[in-house]
Image (cartoon, rainbow, N blue to C red; front, side, top):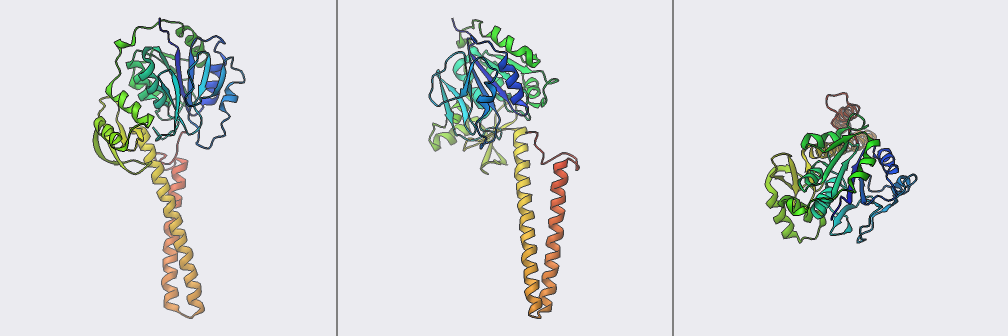
Length: 344
């Protein structure tokens, strides 16, 4: 009889301490494998397993591509790699980001739901934005158990709240109550997963994340998910398809980048910020060049040229200052919505 032997955990901002606390409470003989995605930068030094393993009774290590899944072990997604569960083994894929992240929580949760069905327990902890919302829905649709950290306790409640707004979770608990529940649930027998078939969109998006498709098949798969929109991908600047989803507004490009509407809005804000800083740089370079021309024109007694480029230098400086003030006030949240501020 199958049991709930696959536990997937997702966390973002504030997640290191939350994971440390939760994992330290798990028993040594936990009859399940635990998989963790924490949003980290691509160049992070890879110290997370050592940190999480200090008080943990289970073995904690970065996942290795192709290794078989074993119970009573904790598999941590390495920086800049998606962690995927595939037919009893682990896969690492340097594929397109989902919700601006690699590793992505949605990618892990969706793959677990696809391959393990009702055996999966999904847990979303503290974090910003809403990565994990789509993946947790897939876990529920396949008969798995859904758990979130109580948003009132989470230092960054956005992620657990976004899950709760999308689905009726099975449990919303303080951090210290989650580990005992995981141990209890992992001993439960589960129904045959044929009662919870894999949805077409979960199958397609799982295969896209695996990056095993040729280009023409990948494009055709994205087109099957929805219709082309007027928006562009902030990661690759290609066209975005709006996914046919009655509950969650989502987008994908034909390369494979995926976004919820909230993540796409954040990506557009980051892209806009980068463009504005580039404009500041260009204006300041224009000012410096104009000042250099003025200096040479004065030495050559070309007064009309000097006057013309003095005006250009002054205009460039004024425009640069205006943009810089706008950017800095946006970062501080002084101009309405903090357009350029990320909770992560």
